Image (cartoon, rainbow, N blue to C red; front, side, top):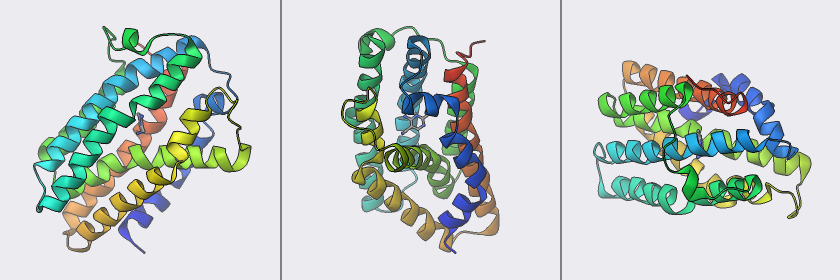
Length: 221
Ligand SMILES: Cc1ncc(CN)c(N)n1
């Protein structure tokens, strides 16, 4: 079994609970309140900004220019493309995206998740960075693909663009590339490094679930 398959197997219950989380169900049923959407977008804007920086720290650990190109492309994707799902959510909530980018205070869970990623990226190996960022990609591809398969939303669904963005083929391809990179790295990694990679992955999976909980409950300090 490949290393990424092992990780996915170990995190299966968390993936399932993310699919069934009330916030995710709220997207599927278009039943989220305006406040829940706004809270999510404000926190996610801050989160994705940090996520791009984590890729930057990963880039500094790369061994080849091809690897550097990969992180470089992924940073561009966050800064240029991953604004679209936020814009979709803002349209549903009836607020301007620009207004949500100013002055939001980090909620405890978002802060915890960002600190986890930053500390792995600052002190860990390239493998730890790959394992720690992977759930961000994987859980969204998983939940969106699950929605597309089970609910088949049509273009008039308010969150259709959000769901379609994360269920897209390119998202699947980007995730498969990341898994391959992680598997290649793990093939020659020591046991201690792999153990830290497992921890980084599992904590990020837990934080993905809690991030939805944070948005659903409008968590604050
Ligand atoms: C917290 C979180 N995790 C994952 C994603 C999808 N890249 C996101 N936008 N926000």
